Image 1: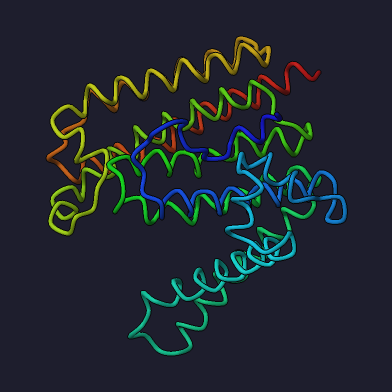
Image 2 (image 1 turned 90 degrees about the vertical axis):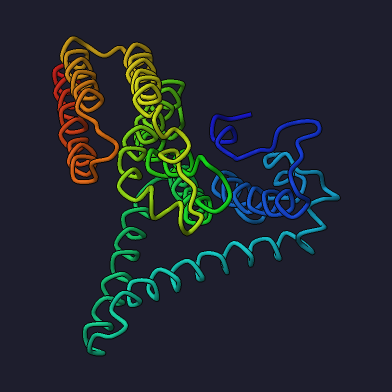
Length: 303
């Protein structure tokens, strides 16, 4: 099994208490993702239903509960991509419903051009990277619904936002190494932390309309939760640096990154929305310090 397979959101083994509808939807999403990855590796002609099922960890009989054939699965993937583009453009126009038609058209065209620009960048990469990039759409599409389903939507957000850690390795190396997975896990922990801070701005309103979040889940225990997730982020990224053979500059950047995260925890007052927003935005600087250190370290080792 390749590392890319490990990214699929497989269900736990045995009795899990999940509804049949959720299981069916999860299987269908995994089959579509598996089709995309398999196509990238062996091409359409060589792709078989058995290969798709093995990659998705879905039996052949269950495959045929969702799709009539490989062609049907491919069309479902195509329809998903088209619907995602349409939804993005419509959503971009939505906030401007009362604006002049020219403003709404401009917003829709801007959203469409942004999607096409991303596609143009993506198709420059190797087939494996294209498949990895396309697979991220499943997470992007799932996130908005998670706030109604689970107290942990920040995990799904982390999975989507941190996908770049996998893409970088896929683009440059044509594979996903262990270092990429540790970096991905560290980034997910970081996202859970800083988006919890962000969610505290709207915690009261979210409670009124039934939106779930880690901010509401942790409540007064948010500081302790942030210590856990931010510490995990630093440790997991540190493991990634070790596996990648990073030098002193990268480790200094990670140390500064850790200090900045600690500063956020010490300053946080969950009842102060303005402060929550300020601390959330400060993660730009934290990320920039870490990114700059990794780039400088890589350049130094390359010379």
